[in-house]
Image 1 (cartoon, rainbow, N blue to C red):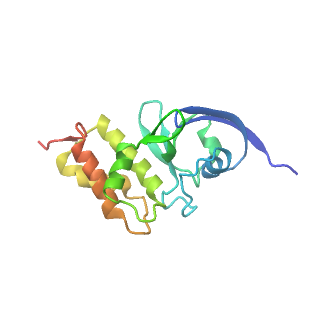
Image 2: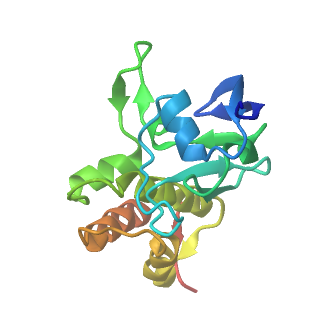
Image 3: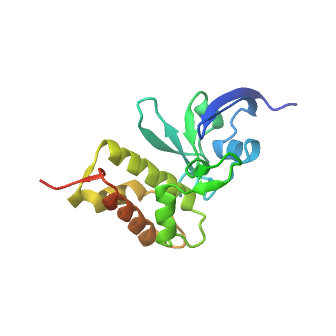
Length: 183
């Protein structure tokens, strides 16, 4: 008896991957970890509740969404563009990190994480929020509400919510063009 496979081709962190024969029904997080050695996305609950595993799915219209990699099959991503937490920092030709993304930098400045297990999901969620605000700035009076809505589904067992929130708010209110004045 053999395991049925299907070829999978997609773009991850700006690089084309595949085709690779992948078992049918293999979850995306397992594909990332076992086939590509991208272990930044975390398997937390394994049920799609905690959002530690989320990856960013980039749509053709320029928008993006979080997709829970622990409950979404790898073949769902056939032909699509995906970003993982490993794709945010800028790297040199040797693959060494030379500059963190603005979100990652703010999380460090605010000591946002304790154990760090949930951090990749928070980085991806906050990245999507900032990218959305670049297209559709938020009213200053709605900043807190907007950040809460964007990060609400992410679970931190160490209760680091306040520091994550503060880091994202610091970035949002201090990045030109993300916030507009109330009228």
